Image (tube, rainbow, N blue to C red; front, side, top):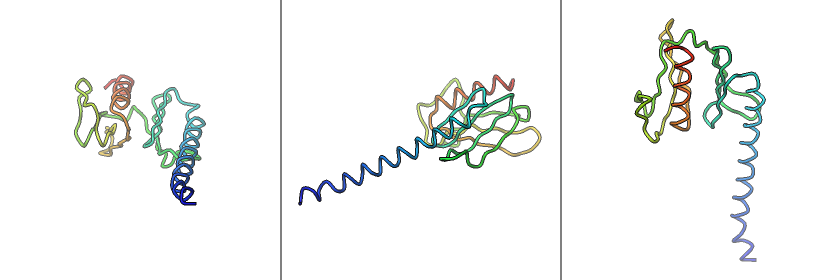
Length: 137
């Protein structure tokens, strides 16, 4: 009986891991359904983003559909910056990692800014370069 009680916490951990995996799988499946109509898309645990005909849509991944979905045109964008740990980063001199990685869009017609979070510096840098080329900035 003592040995059985020692295995009980491990069983709880396995159940928690299985549930967390199932939740993440449902988020990825929701992303796949959402991403069908886009030319290029990205998914990570912080945000999902897609571009189609110079329109960028992004939101937070959930099990059913993106939450807080926003859409804006690349034609309105004045500047695209890669922000890592609250500092603007040159795409030719990337750090290895950072705690807070955002792709920031500044608009020509307003002072509003949109920050789209990323988990990895290389992925954020690739998107920044791609979007700068697409927008002609």
